[in-house]
Length: 98
Image (cartoon, rainbow, N blue to C red; front, top):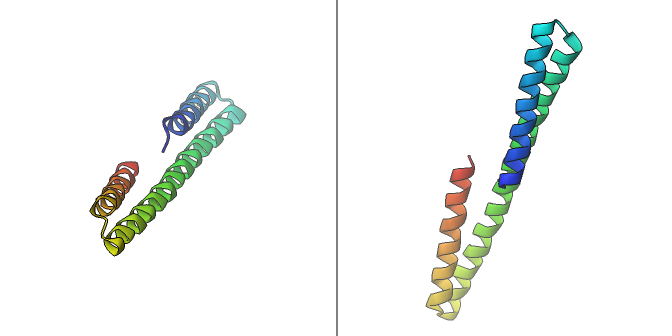
């Protein structure tokens, strides 16, 4: 998940928390509802960014597997190792993304 996507989702969540808190404190139901909606949108945005990153890393892992297999097939050890490294990097990034 990119830093920009994380920041946007976090900002929307914070904005929602503030609106909801001010709405509750002032008895303004509309502001409370808007705050809840902003929080829900921030959460959805965060989940979407995580899913996007997961798909991206799955693709990179698949590309690494193709490189590894091609390297083994043609006897190119460098390509094989690059493929394995790419798969490992993608797997690590997916774990960090959770």
